[in-house]
Each structure stands twice: as C-alpha cells, then as structure tokens.
Length: 217
Image (cartoon, rainbow, N blue to C red; front, top):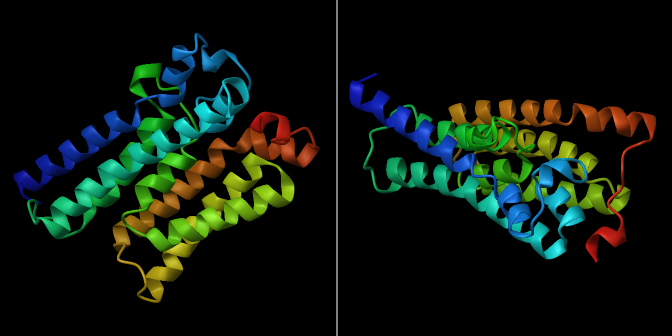
C-alpha cells in the first residue's frame, strides 16, 4: 500500500468514527432536560428515547442515527467509485467507513465509550453499499416487531438477515458491495448480536419488555 492510500484509510476511519460518536439520543435528552443514560433502559438509542422523551423525539433520534451512518460510507463510496478522487484498488474505504461509524456509535469518544447498540447507524452505513440488503433487513425487522412487539428481537433478527442478504445478493451479482464490505457486514452482525446479549437472556426467561402502544403515544 502506498503512503497516500494509508493516509486516506486513516482519515476515513478517524472522521467516520468521530461522526459515529455523535450521541444524538443523549443530545436530544439534554434538550429536554433529561440524561437519557439514567432513564429507562439507559440506552442512547431511538427506542429508549421514544419511551423516555416521546415518539417524535424517538423518530428524530432514529433519523439522525441512520443519517450519520449514511454520510461516511456514502461519501467514501462516492470519492472512490464515482468521483475517483481517491485510488482505492481494494475498495476498503467504504467498508472501513461503515465499520468505523458504527464503532463510533457503540463506543463514542464523547461519552467515555459507552454508547448504543448501533442497529440504525449500521443500516444507514450499509445502505449506500447494499441498498437491497437494507430493505430486506428492514422488512424482517417490521415483520418480527409487528408479530412479537419486541424491539430487541426485531433488531437481532435484522442483524442476522441484513448481512446474510448482502452475502446472497453478492453471490447472485445483485449487489455492488465488495468482498471487504461483505466481511465487515458479517462482523457488524456478530457485534450487534453481542450487544444484545442481555436482551437475549431476558427474551429467553420471559422478562424482556415489549414495546407497548403506550410508548407510541
């Protein structure tokens, strides 16, 4: 690898991580005079924001977390494959931007590395690289959530379905995601499941909280 390519990789990873670290759920809570980390589940994601602050703020949190995933990977993809501003023979930059922005959300430097679970940010980051996989993953989330009422179960399902879909789409030449991106998608799926370990335990012993209609009011 040339020094300029390594410099580009370093810049992409750092910038993507810092963007991912922006804790929108925490900031939304602060705007309402609430430390979201001390309310509800303590998570800074959209589900806890919805329960604690309200559905409008929860939707805003989801949109912002999703958007902060789209921007780094989409920009890296544009620079390497559309604008050709960066030579990227291994197509690593969009893949690394995807992983770095999700890592920033999960371990944000601004909150002493204690963040969210990264599902919405991961979906946003993968969207420019494999939009059909995101659509399939989102559909699986909706089906499982509507059937069960569990956000965690829907998120775990999507974390499995989305990278699996990306692999199949790649095999059938329906996705432009590179092999490097596919590997990182799979790693993100594993990471998402690990971040939901406590939820899985509660699902198994029947103590997990359902997302009730009252949470949507």
